[in-house]
Length: 124
Length: 124
DNA sequence: TGAGTTTTGACAATCATTTTCACTTTCGTC
DNA sequence: GACGAAAGTGAAAATGATTGTCAAAACTCA
Image (cartoon, rainbow over all chains, first blue to last red; front, side):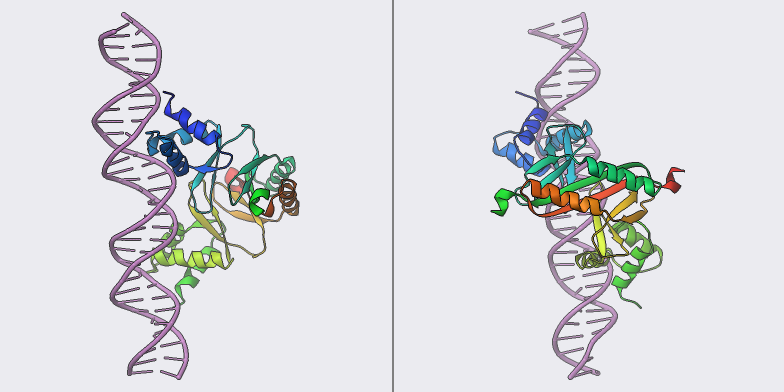
């Protein structure tokens, strides 16, 4: 039996969009796993701490996770219907954010950028 | 006696950064108001619905509000220490987001962009 | 003034997330 | 293979923000 965290990682990897801890828990239980909700949270926490997965917050405040292809800094284009996400890079945005920060005397500037829309399939 | 919602609006306006509902409630009570927490939430909800205030989520999932100078679409440069916020405009980012969305066949594209840093005063 | 409507706030209910704690499993070592 | 420490697990309780309920209070305006 693989370790529980592996199961969570796999469940997350099999999906193409952002998923909440509760979602993943439901999926795993539906697949017959006896995993506990606590463990799902712990696995996600650990993976997000180590940078293996990206986290963001929905408008309702729920945390959603995604296993990305790269661990480098990047952003997402997320479908608001099916939650499928495309990883995007935006050198222009990176520069812009740094510049804005500098202009106002801010140091250690970071930023969050997420783009939402309705994907081709869902808007059909 | 002004209406409760006015009191919330004023409390929010007097502060230069993003504040949580709980913060505002504490402020108002500290000022001697007998306002209830429920009412603070209702006032903030109403104001955010009408676009009078901007809302965003902290990393911890708490909703924070801010009374902005303009109701037009804009973003923020927020100090992660004192939470003071500067309103910023980024035509470049607007264009970039729309473009990215179009490139991937997404429609009705929106975006969230927030820049964080340590302001000049706090990094001193 | 009085009926009807809106606002308010104490309290209970929700819901995601975290903690607690006792129980397993895993591992290195003998 | 056996043993004890350390890490992993999960059920249930605790937390904390937010929302729902409902009766009391304030306001409207004829």
